[in-house]
Image (cartoon, rainbow, N blue to C red):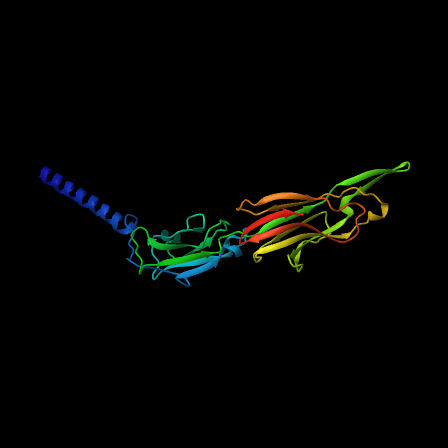
Length: 289
């Protein structure tokens, strides 16, 4: 009889133990996340785009961007990840940036941006094609790819800075007189080879004028110094007022400076041609006069 009782007790214990384990597995919901095989749709407003890199603001990288959105019909208990790979084109990662799309658990959509980078590289038009990929157990409802063409990847901007700071001291009887060159007002102008006014390269009244030129048809142009006002002319001093023009073209390597010495403390207001700028495409050659 004792053996039968022990057997029944052992059987009941095993049954309770199994029931307890099964209940835990069935009701906690922690061991398996049930989710449906929902396809992801990836879209953008167009399948191809063409942008002009020359119009990109270096300080605002998102000047040109393409928004790509991924959506799913029903929210899932796990996050869905969409990544991108370049499958065509001759551009590279220096020309653009793009992030993954993560649709968080419980959500049905998310987006990312493809942004163009300003490189200023001297090269022809480039393009790249990106293809979307669904990671993990998700899949795409249909293949998605987008092609972006980048035009005018040439930097034709020549920056100029013109400065004439300095001073001249001399004796007038028993007094010492110092004349500040910065009190002279010089503007910097650009003219065509035929004498037509193109625009200003600086006209603020400051001792350093800054400006730039770009988009000019091929040909020769004159950098002209406009001695707008010289309050020191009345004193009769004839010391030279050296005016230095510094120029630079980013990414190209065209850079240098020259000093114009054709203006002195007694010079009258007038226009003074200082140099010739020869333009050939995006190439500039500076010849002093």
